[in-house]
Image 1 (tube, one colour):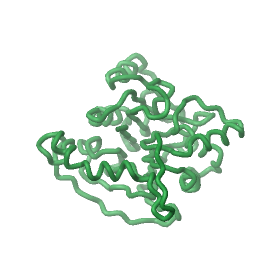
Image 2: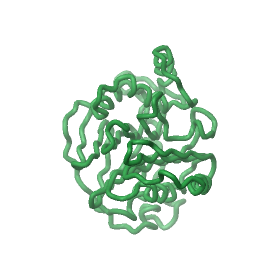
Image 3: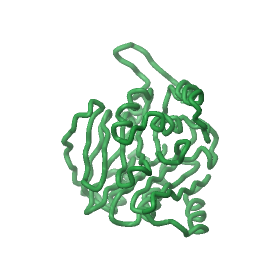
Image 4: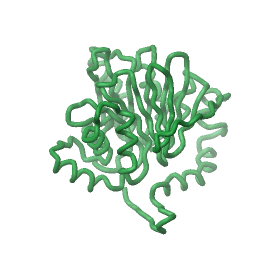
Length: 285
């Protein structure tokens, strides 16, 4: 299971991102990466194969430009493409302006990739995820939120997405279809993650995204819309568990937690693969 962490706020994003990856380390993964945007709109990105410790070692080797109040991070479990640094997230577009991390499977990525390559896009990885960055690049007209809402219906499959654009330096977006995302709200800072365990040490106030929702976080706060561009009022939940309990979600042991999660895990595995109105089942990835 891949892991996602994103941050926008008053503090340096890097320690929050690394801590979040550590909290998600109980999930299976084979590589990890970070993309941190600096005040001058440049992006500092590091990827590594293997344990998160390997990523931290690479970060320690290069201390320059490791400050910025916006960033994304990811732990990957390979589906499309081998466990390599090129295939590790975050992924970007041809001009390294759009940066994103993704959980899930894009079933129609080959079709999209062929179309984008015919338009002149150059791909750097073997992943299905990278097509999303290039698709956004192809459609971008100066507003990342509008572009994301436009391209999401084109994607077939499942996704939990967190992304930003260097031309809009005080904005980070998240979108969900079948892959969990949660948003943590703290004073002058917002944390996005695929699991509450990456957030709870920073804030206990959270919002769960539902399928078909897009969250825009910027200097003015948080806005959540659906794919029809209609704004949605979401309930803010209060987490009362401590970090250890949160990681186990109230169960005394991880094994017991995983046993009771099996029904939801099966549902998550089938989301995006069963089209009820058409009576079709799509497998792959």
